[in-house]
Length: 111
Length: 112
Image 1 (cartoon, chains in turn purple, red):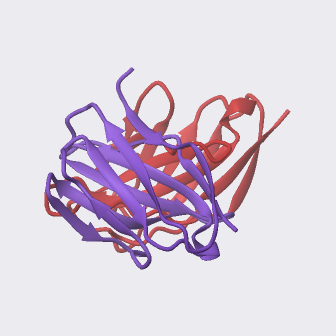
Image 2 (cartoon, rainbow over the protein chains, first blue to last red):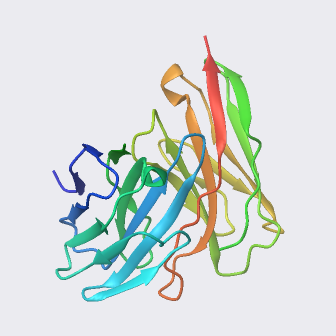
């Protein structure tokens, strides 16, 4: 089915470890986004991309890096995970003039 | 994106209409009003959006005031499956604005 797929769905990391979250969309969307959601909070934008090879900072970019080497993929990296990065991460994609589609989320726990 | 204000929580009896308000008094002329909902920490689900005219689809109706400073999402016959957090967002859909800024939303509880 067409949509936004996030990999992995769950992950537990130790403090200081690194990892990469993958977001893949098959709708040929130009724009892609990474959000995080903490308990009882709304979604906060980490980074976003308006096209292949371009990225920009959102509201809470510190501690994260992103890359968009291919149009269909948007990667979110944590170089040195911290307990404060324990959260649920959502990826979204959209095309101009249309509403975003969201993935089902990645639950990350940093211990 | 314009700031939006929503009540933190609301209850609605099953089978009745749920009316969820949203204030967006600083909305600009090119900003749409979007509504999303999130069930059990799943990914947000698009419901409806509009610019200035009222809109209706198979899920809900959106009523936007004439001055566009507020709007109401209407779920005509709420069911238990409509229990969720509902987010109202004001954002331009044009190429000049790429972000969608979420607030804390309204937690709607549909009661049997």
